[in-house]
Amino acid sequence: MDVKRYYQGTGRRKTAVARVRLFPGNGEFVVNGKKPEDYFGPRDLLQREIRHPLQITNNLDSFNVLVKVRGGGVHSQAGAVRHGVARALLDLDPDLRASMKKLGLLTRDPRMKERKKPGLKRARKAPQYTKR
Image 1: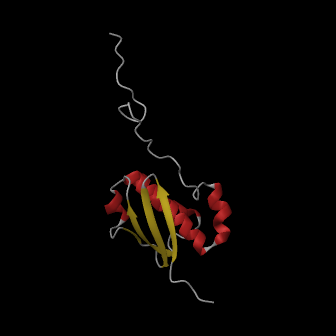
Image 2: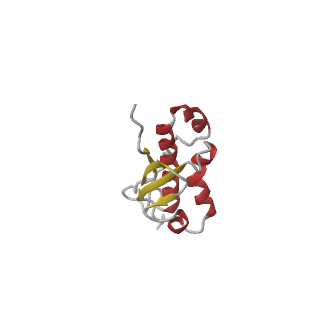
Image 3: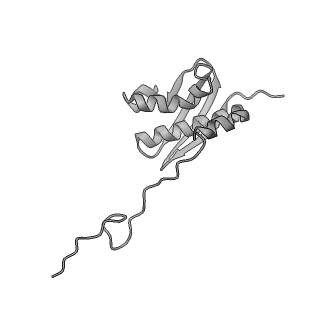
C-alpha cells in the first residue's frame, strides 16, 4: 500500500479557514510562513490552543505542521487551526475520533456574527425611542 506524504485537514471558525498539513518530522510548526509565536504574538493561550490536539494524542514531536490560514481575527484563526489539526490527525488515524470528539475538538463552532437588520443600527440595537 502507498504511504501518504502528508495528512491534511480543514478547520473553520467564524470566517477563518485554516488548511493544515501534517508531515512526519520533529514538531516544527509553521503558520502562513512564520513561527506561531511571530504570527499569533506573545499570547500563550493561543500557542497552547493550536497544539492541543497534537498534545492529547502524544504526537507533539512526531509531525511538522504547515498551516495556511485566512479570514477572521486572531482568536478565530487559532480556533480554525486547532480544528484543522484535529481533522488532519483523523486523516492519520481514524481510531482517534472517539477521544477527540469527547474533548470537543472535532466540533465546528457554529457561532457567527449576526447580520444587520433593516431599520436597526446593528443586528439588534434599535434607534433611540422619542415620545415627542
